[in-house]
Image 1 (spheres, one colour):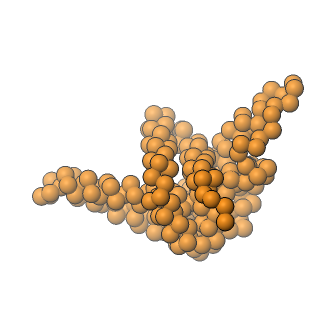
Image 2 (cartoon, helix red, strand yellow):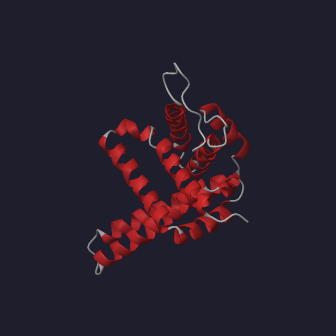
Image 3 (tube, one colour):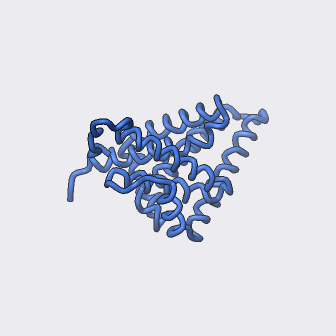
Length: 200
């Protein structure tokens, strides 16, 4: 995304502001597609792909987002959504058990929170990988490797999630806009990692 053109004379908004507006429109489209819940991984993966294309000169618009989503939505995407939903429900059930005052509950809560954070990072980093467009298992495997070898990037992913959650908590209508900045953050973390990798 560093190859953006400079603002032309007389142009009110520069390319970065255009990308910001496009990101918000893609985020709004992503929020709508996420409403059935099981479509969330495919929705976020498509948003990352569209925003990644912006760095290659392709338009990052809601129209391109829906076109890309129609081309790729398949049973595997819904399966990934079902797995993510089941994992989230299991995590919430574990936290509820920990809050019920069972013996060893504080330690159990810490361990469950740690496992949940790792799963969240891997899942989100998988959405940012190009493999997620066609092969979720491969995307998850590569994302797990990325999470281990790029701890700083994983911390940035958690920070992006915390910021998105805080924005949505402070002002509920913002929940419909946070998928855009979250997808942009995930894409930036992935681009940052690939830029550091040696060629070949």
